[in-house]
Length: 315
Length: 313
Image: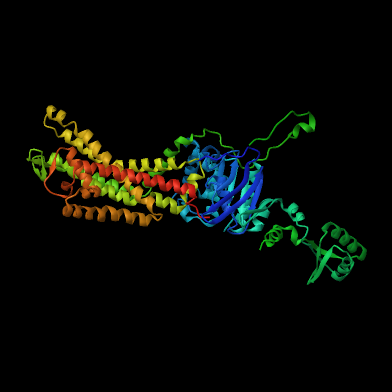
């Protein structure tokens, strides 16, 4: 059965896309358009990230609605799968193969000419910083090395669209920074990259473009800061560490946009409904009273807070 | 990557590059993209290469097949005048070892092929389901039919190196032992007969274990199931056929292959399991086994593809 794919207009176009596993809902009525760049697919475990990624990779067919990659259904169209590079979440591979053998085989499976497959594999392995270990069997690899090898298998055939399912899980901090940098390079080379994670700071280190998925539904999409702005009903928190927190608090206490003031050990936390006004008044108070500010931060501008707000409403 | 160059002005400006392209450590693949229809060849080659990687999967069985061939060839050469017990010509005269060894050797090739079926064949689909390999196959431009065709042809090549090559070499050896040119010409049909028996055995021992590997998702259980069917069900079928005097003994794959071999080589068995089976029933049983097994593999792989089985999420 071939489904009609939505017309082109993005790398991925999902229209009312749903996926059930028997009675279990994987993804529910997702409509989404991905135009390019790096996008972080964010959600807690079991939210439907892997299901959505598998549908984009052509491994799963939507139960209802449609999902097109480059204008075609990846499940039905073998040709479009050649333009997709997918690194699954699981670590299972042919462990008795060396990294080079594994990546070469994957390149061949994706249609790379036999004569050039090994060169393409070596190049992909080099891009992932695994050249020194490419003749070693995957069986003896650490988690980080397995992740890099998996990413190399995804890029060896030079796809235009990359899908990395939890690529940083279990990777040590040094390797994480390195992998993030390499993924960024792929995007800089013109690839569209979707990276899923349930660890917020991993995505934050990669991109500010996010898609939040929760219980199979698309909760939010766009720039993390824009999304934060949209949540105006939630007070925005500003933390000031200074030598005279009570003076700062007194200056702002009269303002109607301030919802709450909490004194902390080294400063004061202000919850406001109008962050822009609050920052202006704060600056004025600091200058007028000669307060020495050692630190000014907003815990709500990170991805964790956004995610907490978005999912918290549905809990 | 190279620096971009453009028109340069004179003086100090000429020393400055007009622009720079940063090396991102990324090179585009420039080369042919093979058609999706060739993917089964990649799967087949990988299946063979994988089997060849370790000594115990295939090389040991191939070594045993070589030993069987050398011993059978030696018997044919050294004991030409002796007759073989339990094997007679249609006229009732006992067959010579030179002639009788050809169908007699089939049971030994069956034993070796059974080993290969255990170490490789019965693990194929179950192993790929368990290891999540389908994720790698079907996320690339591989269709279920490419996978099935690749795995079956790969397995046919491996088993064929034992079951097709062995009897063929013995048939050629038989021609070499001909007393005269006339006898050589008379004996020429042993070549297509050896090929026919070999092809049938190859088909059975390549496809049937694959079918069992498609039934369960654990390679060890699949191996156990196949071994039980081959050894226990086959034996029970033979016992049952003795009691009921029916053709149920054809469920015994090795006996069926023996029966077809003796039938093709125009020799009769005086005793033994194969004697009780009608050659046409044996032939039908072997083809039915292979057909059902292929259908099972196709069904299971299509099902895995549709359901997204094979990758933990």
